[in-house]
Figure 1 (cartoon, one colour):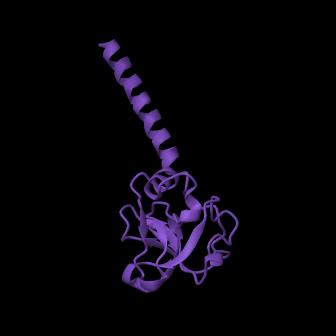
Figure 2 (cartoon, rainbow, N blue to C red):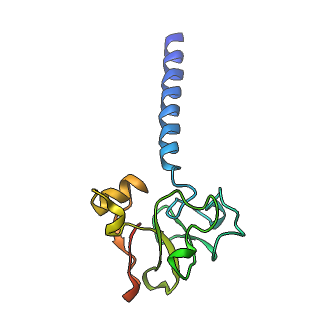
Figure 3 (cartoon, rainbow, N blue to C red):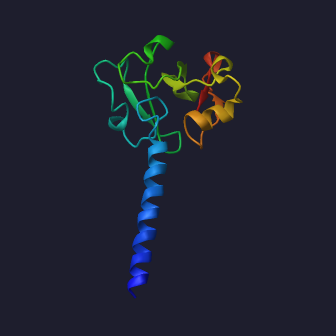
Length: 144
């Protein structure tokens, strides 16, 4: 009986370790556009909200949520210290919303030797692909 408890505890600890490692990987982009969210308050935890250009949003049109904020130009993305993680972001319209928002870019100049989908999976989320923002003539290629 005692062996079963020790085995169960050992398995629980191992599963907990794997879960923590998976969460650490998932949180790598927590301060960047594209981080998972349920509410805007969860977005950009390492940045001063007063320094972020535009309104912080959690897009629910992306499964798991997508941290972003409104913008006018690319330069509005990554203005606050701690807002971005070094990957380029672009300001683009999103689908039919008519709103310009910051997104993690997967445009050709950002990919290096990667394909767009691989870049997004390696640098954002394993569920993301490189896609058009779908916002008309100002479309951009982004990870979502």
